[in-house]
Amino acid sequence: MSTVNQTPATHAPVLKDQIREFIMENLAHAKGITSFTDDESLMESGVIDSLGIFRLVSFLEEDLRVRVSDEEINAETLKSVNSIEQLVLSKKK
Amino acid sequence: MAYILQQLLTKSAARYPEKTAVWARGRSITYRELDERSNQLAHLLRQHGVKKGDRVGLYFPKCVESVISMLGVVKAGAVYVPLDPQAPADRVGYIIGNCGIRALITKEDKRHGLDESTLASLEFCVMIEEATKSSNGTKIIPWSMLSEFPAAHAPEVVLTETDLAYILYTSGSTGRPKGVMLSHQNALTFVEWCAATFEITREDRLSNHAPLHFDLSVFDVYNALEAGATVFLITEDLALFPSRLASFIETQGITVWYSVPSALTLLLLHANVNAEKLSRLRLILFAGEVFPLKYLRQLADLLPHVELQNLYGPTETNVCTYYEVERERLASLEKLPIGIACENTEVFAVNDQDEIVTQPGGTGELYVRGPAVTYGYWADPEKTAKMVVPNRFQKNFEEKIYRTGDLVQLAEDGNYYFLGRRDSMIKSRGYRIELGEIESALLSHEAVKEAVAVAIPDDIVSNRIVAVIAAHDGITIKPSELQQHCGSRIPKYMIPELIEFRDSLPKTSTGKVDRVQLTQESIRAANQPPSEVVSQ
Image (cartoon, rainbow over all chains, first blue to last red; front, side, top):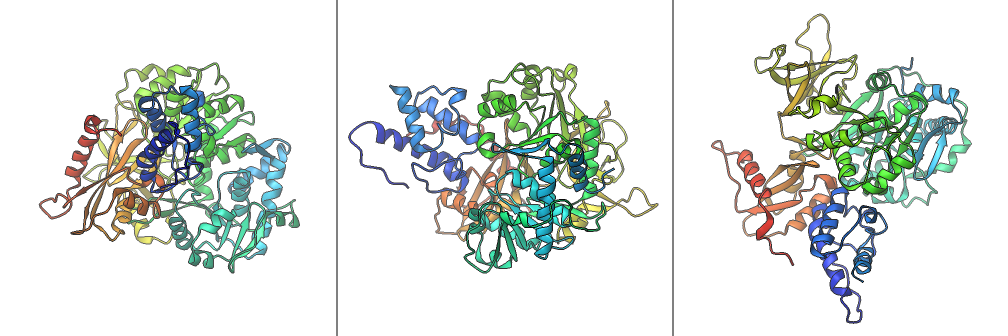
């Protein structure tokens, strides 16, 4: 598992853990991958494939309750754990 | 008329030298450049000892150099072997060893991942980017060396249409991939049929969605070259995002699209496509798996101006039958036909009495005859003898026909319909997957005593894969460990997404693992609503 940075008491680390855990359990393991960093490109490492993207989007919409538009499903927004966290945070403001 | 693939390029380069031949990752090259660079590469390969019939591996992600390499290798009289850049190094190493590749065109990060013995077996590597120094004995040749070689003409090599052009590796039931040998004639039979049937012109803009080790890409690349058209190579970063892919099709003015149905389904479901945006698109070809009628109907309604063609055929024959979607019949169709034989190809079904099916309603295994049929599998005469067999239905002369292993039905309308497989090969996202190859990967883990891979039918990707495992007594192992183990042996699309553990697997009366029961149980479990799973 990747390391969690020590951050001030906000909701961010919890959210990031949730995202990381979902990707690890539901996407990475099924691709034979057991570790990735929060910054790593999930597409380049093969964690996320064409169907994985939509499982991830369902997770964001159903579990984290943010609405993701078709246009937001792109290589920058969904690149890494960090960028996905940013997407969710920007929606919750 | 062309009888070897490179003649398609030579002809178009003479007619349209300044036209764009290939576009990839924001870069493009003209026909003149493609012709010259591939001539240079052919000379370079020859000078470094590549001879007629030698196999040259192509091991890097899709880019302009992919097409230069394909053409450069055949111009050298050699045979190219596209290696999946996403596959585990172990599998790539096996293929390199299996077909005796000694020259590899690659990138440093790919070369670096290969194991020592594979690297030691290579005589040289041509690096498509700036080369770094070799860390071991392999000779490294930077791409920039191409400029040292003659550009105007390819080396003199005597080739006929019966020489091999490329080898495509597909999943093998005994646990290792097998190399399908394809000759220039095999490829051109298909390319020329496509050119005539789909009337590809130099105005066309073809997409290349499939990976280059997948036979769908033969159409994209060579039919573009044949017509003097442009082929746009779609890379992973683009292919993954339907909305982005749709705007790519729109802005690049793609006119001809060929992919597996699941790629089209994702476009349909997750990109806001419509006829206005894709007004230049005129033809969609799909192959590799069954297109669910539900989505095909939606696609047909959404893009009323686009001709839709269902192509069918295994790598061993490329496409052998086709069906032009009839919109007026689409609502009443219960199943999508695979259609009728392509020109210069004969197909027939052989029933259990070993007779050719001639009456509508009859079912049997589909056989293919003609110049599109492969010679067989590289270095595997046993497997070849099983699948590429003497034609026992005509005795006048010796010829081989290919047994597809697909069960089909001949219908009243003259079309064939796909019914299923005779063996345990399945399709997922158009990829051929032998469940046996997955099981071998699982069984190679020391903790695993018994393993069965099961295909769960799925609306979008055709099949999902799960596995049922019995471990050796007293050993516990996590699913993720086994998935990781698989990841080092088989491609990601073959790794079971779920692994279930049991004390032992159910057996049939003859003591074999009961696949039928396991499959039924797994499908039932997969279709149950996940209500009992507590999230978080």
